[in-house]
Length: 500
Image (cartoon, rainbow, N blue to C red; front, side, top):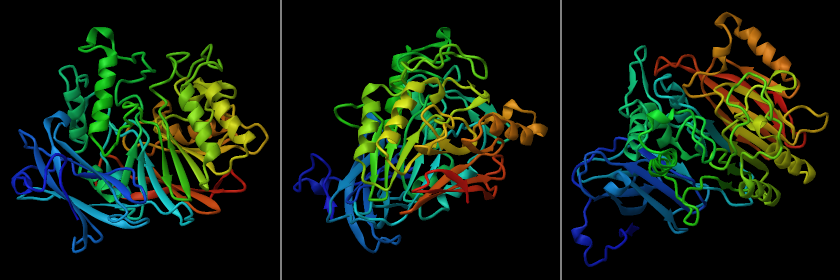
């Protein structure tokens, strides 16, 4: 099946050919899959004017059974990124693995793969990988090599901080990020350059080629610790553009550099539902764009006003959307993909340490989880990024154990490279630090690992959820082996985290 580009007629087809030469420097990506749909993406380096590349989708890696061919346009208005959305029951069938590639007249991209969604009544197990926080200069990406080697993931989810707006250098690993004259991305072109820099990593490109991918943003895709329309930590004296323009530039680059289809009526909306057959619904949240300012700017200190239930992180429309989707979902598991920790985290019992996470917006947490409890909605679990530390436990409406069955569980997947909470403790006292955090947050917090980086994998089955935390032995070597840190089980009826 060959599809003509928009605006090209059959009569003029002979004059439309792929460009002769260009580099696929950022690899390939597949976006949110459907039963009969997928969006495919690449970037072309070396073009100076608009042009076309050929896209092929096949049932086999050798492309002997091609089911789709088309020409896809790349133009400077989107920084020479190219994407094509395929929606056809004649081309794509439910629950099948497909392979795809882009090509010029003289070269080809790497081959990527994706799996289409199973039918709504399917109860086949699903496997979802998740990660966050991959600061370029904090470490290398052997964790992405591990994700790419998982082979049978239905999707990989990024839970925020795919890029960091700030730069720096790390001579130990030979990484430099000098984008922006002041070491900060502020213009649209600078944010675009950030994505090209991060995607120059071969392990990250391999991960993207291995499975369908979706992402939510956190703060560093725009500016550290911004809240809604309020700026973050950048001093006003260093601004080359105003904050709202900077945020818009970050958002535009986020949508350009990936297979992300925007919602026409709400072009800057990133929260959405991903239907993965009858086994899972994934709710991708936006906890940045609609939130009120933080109660305090400091962490690990007393914070007056942190318990104000009127302050929102989600905004009213998104909060009502979450409740409506959870109530209407017929999926066995409802996976809330979220940037910041939902469980309570105290320095000493009763005193939250971080006003930037759900502890700082207790009204939203109480309303959403109270709704889950009142409606007796089973199979709710949360996957989380941001805090750069592996944790797992049970989630309650006020964040802490209340003596009843928890309405949700939570798995926090460390970080790909960014430094975590271990910086709060001397290296020799990390085991004691982990024991202290567990004791201060018992019994809802079941697991914590301070020093390791990595990712998580969920396996969703009809009667249980299995979660595994995996970590490379080092982030200073691209070839560091990846090992299992911990495994967990959540029974659908029991609804609580236990070590597997």
